[in-house]
Amino acid sequence: MKFLYRLGFYLGGFSVGLIFLAFILNGKKTSCNYTPNARVIDNLLQKELVIPQAITSTHPELNRDQLKAIITKGKVNFSKSDTQRDSCKIYHIEAADRKTAFIELTNCTKTVTLISIQGF
Image (cartoon, rainbow, N blue to C red; front, side):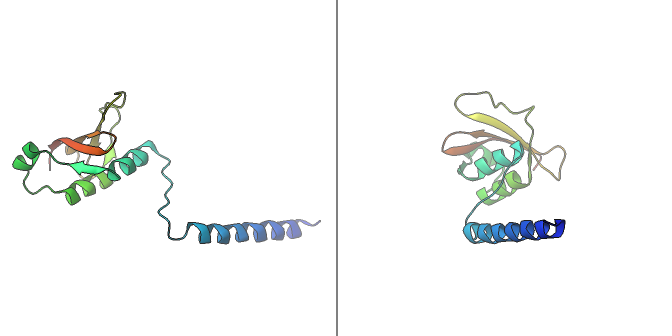
């Protein structure tokens, strides 16, 4: 069998497979989070965000939507995070646009609680 025939069969099967996947995954909330940073941020955003009263008194303009935006655009610093805890892991998320701005969160099974916020 000539190379062009084999290439044609391969591309035909590959295109049928892509169309099949497009119909199956269309409309579903599927994502491919391969990096540890993306997995942690996706996990944090799926849970209920709790902002303690002490933080809302010092930062009255902070609400859940702004906190979600900070988490989405931020980068997890694993060297400053405590991921070895059994109960609630503590994550240190640095802002992408500011070098000195960061937040610290506890990631429990059902909730994410804001511990501290600096530079916002």
